[in-house]
Image (tube, rainbow, N blue to C red; front, side, top):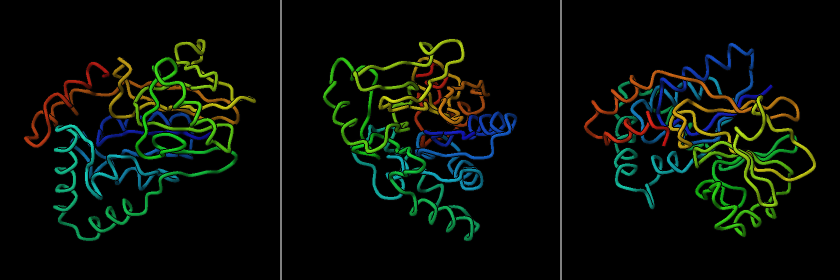
Length: 252
């Protein structure tokens, strides 16, 4: 079994809770699809945990923004990226500081293994392109072009913070439409599977989200965590906008 996590966004409480659930299930392999950083109050702690626990991690757009420069970010996201950079730079332990920056520098935009492809955003634009559920109605051509770019049958992604499965009709199935087990059976049709967000869900469900790949079945998992702790840290940080904490209670 493989646990696939994404979009942690410096939310240490959510990440710790998800990792505890992964450990409880006896899962030893963890893939991270990026956006370890951004928005949240604990970038150092989240980087350290991902470096320790994940078998590989990809580069998300917020990780890219912290290492390089934020582009096309709203004001709150841009402020969070610059503060995150400062927080990493102000680490007093030079060995820890350098290890984190080296890790960020080495993050790749995609990974392919065992007939699967892993990205943060989309198959054709792995760091920055959003694939929204509404695209099946408003921009189906974008989805079809992404399916055409896939050499593999199945792609895992994050970025929108909305879990579910795109198939190349195109059609989007949220976990609630996948039956009581909230599982998707990988078959003979192409699929792009969004694993959701650990640290900042946006599907109106505030619980942390991740996915488990067990042979040819993907199970979507939701876990409650102590949102109050993360929200309080955000509200107490003058460099982070308060709404970044408030939105966590609403899952949006």
